[in-house]
Image 1 (cartoon, rainbow, N blue to C red):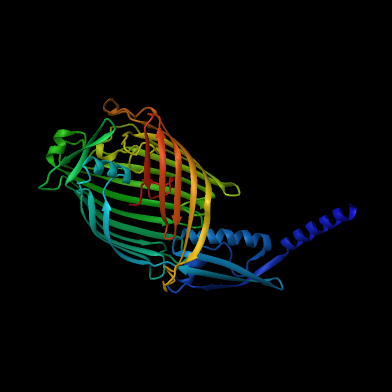
Image 2: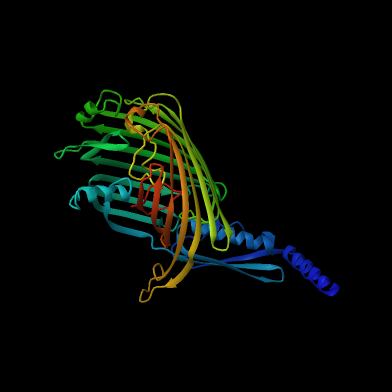
Length: 468
């Protein structure tokens, strides 16, 4: 017995000593980056040449670096390995790049989510195709191999959208400052102009557009370390509406005119520590944003504070738990209809997808317990020779979720039923995740009204609106 105890203690001591032995990173080799510049990859690593570390610390840093490379969303796969010879470490990084140039046609539905569209489409006996959009969207990711993004969009149909955008993650030598700019225009022949009974009411003019929105924005991004980002953004927004909308809802612009404009200044701090931002299983996220509106010809002048905390943990084996809490507070002052938002667009309680709940303040809690029916599985696609497509992955998760939320409406609560009361939705979900950040969620939900339904989504349940 004594010999067994002695042997066990010796093994533990040997492991600790070996794990704490100092080693030096002598070289970092990168392969597979035919387009991506080496410095873009190096920027995401939490180790560097000539750094002194231990084997335990190195393995932790490799895990952290792989997470950072994954969240760049430039690679389908990344692997980091190392070799130790005489206390010198050689790091080998291999990446499989994505396809970066996407000139793809647009054929999509124009609605808050798929479920709302399907409900309207079914009500028309599957004959109303008016809420479809079509056009061309050019996405050039990783432009010049520097993780820059160029976007050009021409979308016609129910909700027209024209966009020019250029995002530069780094504009200085130390790679801490970035700059994003975009110019866009929306115009619609059918515009929702008020919310009543938690539903949108639309005005249509078949001969002309009923609303037009223009936006010009510029954003400075400061990212000194890997996980924390500061963003300063200025946006100027202009809205033009049909004169009939002004009559039907005088508070739409709240200025007795058919056009209005205002400016937004915002500061956003993000502490991002999730393993995979599109579908996290481990880590945390913290965000805080302050938005100041400056009135122009439309009296939008309130202050908003928006905060979000999110946590994901692996419980045991294939079980995962995720939870988030988000809240928005607005300063006093009347908010024109077109400038306020509660639940039903970017934020919602699952089970209430058919409703739009207006308000100036809200809080939203989401929790899910997931079981990996199929853990992340890599596979080769036969007869496809391009590396960007011939190796894929998929995973499948079963989830039990519970969402709660509350919207405070101090302006039009008499016209709606769900504001100023607790919303609670529960259900079960099946999530399918694959490469190129594609996700399909099928959910069965029941809300506090006793309403049940099957809902389809295409995004992380802790994120915002579906990427249709």
